[in-house]
Amino acid sequence: MNQNNIRTAQRGTTEAPWVRYALTGIALVFMFLFLVLPLAAVATEALRKGWDAYAEALREPDAWSAIRLTFITALVAVPLNLVFGVAAAWCIAKYEFKGKSFLTTLIDLPFSVSPVVAGLIYVLVFGAQGWFGPWLAEHDIKIVFAVPGIILATIFVTFPFIARELIPLMQAQGNDEEQAAQVLGATGWQTFWYVTLPNIKWGLIYGVILCNARAMGEFGAVSVVSGHIRGQTNTMPLHVEILYNEYQSVAAFAVASLLALLALVTLAIKSVAEWRMESELKALAELPPERPTPARGATAGIAN
Amino acid sequence: MTSAVLPHGAVPPPVARRTPVRVLPGFNLTLGFTVFYLCLIVLIPLSALLFKTFTLTWPQFWEAVTGPRVLASYRLTFGASFIAAMVNVVFGLLVAWVLVRYSFPGKKIVDALVDLPFALPTAVAGISLTALLAGNGWIGQFLEPHGIQLAFNPNGIVIALIFIGLPFVVRTVQPVLEDAEKELEEAATCLGATRWQTFSRVVFPSIAPALLTGFAMAFARAVGEYGSVIFIAGNMPMVSEITPLIIISKLEQYDYAGATAVATVMLVISFILLLVINGLQSWQRKRSAGNTQ
Image (cartoon, rainbow over all chains, first blue to last red; front, side):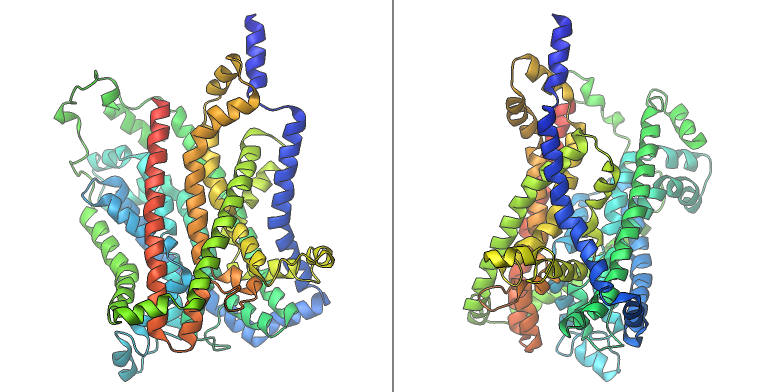
């Protein structure tokens, strides 16, 4: 009787084999159609006229300057958002203060604003008819339809990535280890470098890599502020659009293939970071409970 | 933590609250920098949008946001986003379920691939979906003879938005499914429920808040999406022109006031969606906190 119940219970938490196979099959076909096929299409379209045409398309000077501008943009935007992300996560996760949840909502805001609107607001601030437009024109500084505008728009759309990744992670880790370091006489910077940073390492990498992927791939916001000047203010995604609209399909897909490659590398690094974070969290969960004597818990954390 | 030990209604002693004591340094520095950077990058530029809108008179504003082309674009944007988010709820739940409950070869790769739409630049997604679905593409060539057109019309917009929104549903449902207690399902089965009854009465209610959150996130993202859609949409006025494209074309005609007015409408809608998503998330947290106690 008891045995029987256990067996029913186990059978009850999964489906009949044919249902399992059917569901897995449908899910995999869906994933294949929507995720794998587009990737495969990029590769085949890029190589439609062979490797020579592909290499030719990437050697073109306009393509090169687009690649360079994309890297410059990411190189400025990602570190700035990294510093912001760490600072925001530190004050939100480590302290209690009034208006904290409001601040968190504001940080999330750029995610829900349409990229086109994100570009538009910078045109309104720095454009010819904008707030600073006349002053900038007087001093011959170009922000919109130039590189600084592209960088600003990119910073806006990638604004929350790192903060958002770090806040829950640092909240879950709590303050015990940092407090112990303080008690042991570490300065604030030492506490951060030697205690907090190793703890959030994988979360940080995860956030940076996603932030970078979005920074290099952003299209809508950048397209509004760029002005589409070939060889000057074209990032890779914008260059793809121009080539595509000029019916230079092979060249467009060749540049797109670089971006697709970037996406795959991003996914690989992201998965590794995720697995490492999971195993570290699991190791944390297996530690003996820290609460009964706070002092012992804290030192155990340090020794770790 | 301590409140679980205390009898119902008892007030925990004030000494137990340790958090207000700020032992760690750097609060003023980090909060100050966070607020400064937030104002500089996000709040001041966004306020420029509102100030510009306030320079319009009400009739000007109303005319800009309710022109027939603009109204058609709202219908298209919200309709297509709604359909795409619904499809994502169904298939996102299916993918999450298969990834959590079943094992099959290559599962880790499939799991990693779910995030592809986050990582793939939208312009790349747009041109590759177009290449697939156009009349001479891999998929399009089989559908075209049957009179099914998926590219260069609203169908294409829905497909691009499904692509963009898929990870939102999968990634919100997946952790909830992982944490769901199998004991509840076992109990349901022991009490005589069929598998379908167990799913619809026990499992589904526990993941419903996550599904709804995922739906709202996919919908919010789809409403603002631009890059992947414009390649596949065909962009015919009144038929397949999305609202973000209206903003762009108004800008290209130097109609800054009109572009700003439409952008303000989009911004207000995304504010509302953000608040809805936050509300749903805190509801979900409360639900899961209730389950574990």
